[in-house]
Amino acid sequence: MEQILVRAYTPSDPTKSTAIRAHRISKAELVTNVLKKLGIYWGLAFLTFFIPVYNVFFVPFFFLIGVYVAIKVERAKFEIMHGKIECPHCNEQIKLRKAVLTEDFQVTCPHCVTVVKLSVKASRTSNLSHTELYGSE
Image (cartoon, rainbow, N blue to C red; front, side, top):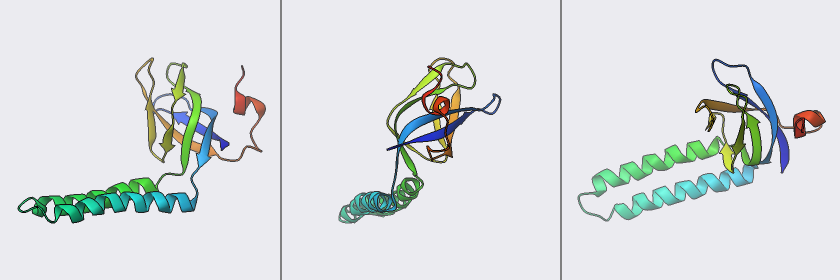
C-alpha cells in the first residue's frame, strides 16, 4: 500500500490535490481479474447455449458483456483503500471508500451534490511533502 497524490477537479472550479492510501494493482493481479471476468461471462454464454430459443439472445449478450467488463477491469491501475479529498466546489471533505481508481473515476460530493473527477497526479511518496501527504491538521 502506498500514498498517491490525486487531483480532484470539476469543469468550473479550481483543482485541488491531496494524498490518499491506495494499492497499486500489479500486472499479475490485473491479468487474473480480467481472466476471472471473462471466465464468468463466457461461462454464462456457454451455459445459455443449451436453453432453446433464448440462446439466440443470451449467448451473444454474455459474450459481448464479458469483453466489455474485461476491458473496464483492465483499465484499473489503483485500488483506493481510504482517504479524504476536498471538494473543489464547496471546500468540504469527501470521504472515499474502497473502490477501483480508473482514468474516469468520479465521486459525488454529499454536501453540494457536485460530481468531482479524480485523476492520479503522482504515485511516488518520496517527492511529496508532509502537508501534501497528511494535510494541515
